[in-house]
Length: 307
Image (cartoon, rainbow, N blue to C red; front, side):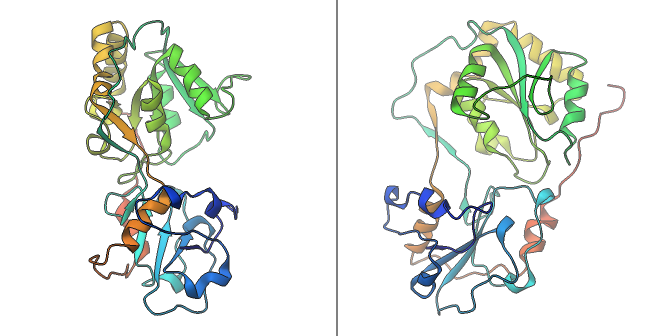
């Protein structure tokens, strides 16, 4: 498979993929001289340029588009690629390759543990983008009226950091102190969810989510709080306080760890599986922009009346 574009301007992403770990054999390259020999050509939406597309396309060659960004912050696909794409790899549930981790039965379940013990702070929000389409910053301002929220990063108190930024070490340190992690997406769009949510699950905090994903489908049962499922922010805040004060109730949000684990799949493996599936039907996205942007149904959070 040929990675035609860079990945956020980096040409290194073909070397960062791990096709050797896939069940089926595949090779990744960013060397464009391999175009005619490639079974698949992959484009990263943010880096697609209308004046930098393949001139030739061998018969039977598949073309795919990859993105994990929100449609609210993406640019439209050039007309030259409309109708030319066979597959997509995104967080959308109707993509050909889904880039989200999945939860599955654990082969080695974690032993029982008191996840409530030694935590002392209610909620953490790690953030760098202070003005978003979803208005998550407005949501946090409202939530902060009822419960303490520590905002760390560019939008927080001066000098408040968690280093290295968004690293495993950062999340590990946070999990020792915080009951809840605010996993608030920059856009509330169909299926949109980012790694922040899964990082909180991985490191032992209960995510409070604000987004457009069907969390009951992608997350272990009973593992998170959905802000949009509460009548208003005050009701959510009351539940957070009650949960943090009750060891048994808080630990119930971690009960899934006794039975499930999160599994991440390399992007290359999803494509590789499709390439080796001879029974996969031929298809093409006739209007990618209609599917990706208009069907995303993005909207902005607004404070509920009489909150």
